[in-house]
Image (cartoon, rainbow, N blue to C red):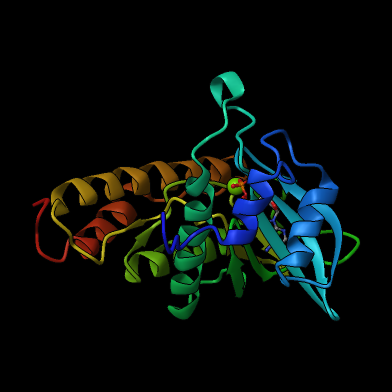
Amino acid sequence: MPNDPYLDKSVRWRIATGNLGFQEPGYRDVADAILDAGLATEVLQRIGSGKEADVYLCLDGRRRLAVKSYRFYRTSHRGGRPIKLDSMGHQASREYELLVYAWRNGVRVPEPGRRVENMLSMEFLGSLERPAPRMQEVVPSDPARLATETLREVERLADAGIVHSDMSPFNILVDRDRPWIIDLAAGVRVDRLGASPWIRLSEASAALQHGVDALARYFRKHGQEVEVENFVQGLVAKLDRFGVLA
Ligand SMILES: Nc1ncnc2c1ncn2[C@@H]1O[C@H](COP(=O)(O)OP(=O)(O)O)[C@@H](O)[C@H]1O
Ligand SMILES: [Mg+2]
């Protein structure tokens, strides 16, 4: 494909020559890719590992960064077949775009850095000794306040026209006592009404319901009730500016 927007020639070359295999890339290879791309000057350690991506703590000069690198294979992919080459660059660019968009709209997300190929950099949350924990692992000192602040971020996202499609205490980090939304990869944008606004809005409101339910379960476990129905209905009404679902 000429002028491929996602993977540049160097990646194609690494793939073609076998310098980038479809096997699990070792730490070394990913670290080299991050350095080659000029995203950081030093790669310190891997801090997270999910189905499709790994996250590394890096230094760019003295600044700490988290670099998320989408893999060219999926651990849980049935049969372990390689997946389409372009799709990981596409995932990274989608997540980066949503991160920038959310950040510009004042949502509490890590400040975006840059995106190169299948990797994106952002502000690192936490300290060198201890990356910020996921909310799931945190026992809140003030559950009522954390719940209010978390729902406020969900609302800010919705105000910006985004619904996080995987909102849960696993995709929220708690840093300096505040909730930070991460992992926007598969967010649904409802501010651009395309050809099928009804489908998009239905998807978005289902994702919203699912996400707020997950948050409510977490807070209930910590003794804090969340009014799910009203909250979700209110946001859906706001998202559905043109009354498509009504
Ligand atoms: N900006 C960040 N600062 C600190 N840790 C992070 C940051 N982004 C991600 N992490 C860590 O990496 C893990 C995986 O990140 P996430 O974006 O949720 O990827 P995945 O798609 O694999 O779930 C997180 O659970 C968190 O522990
Ligand atoms: Mg995640």
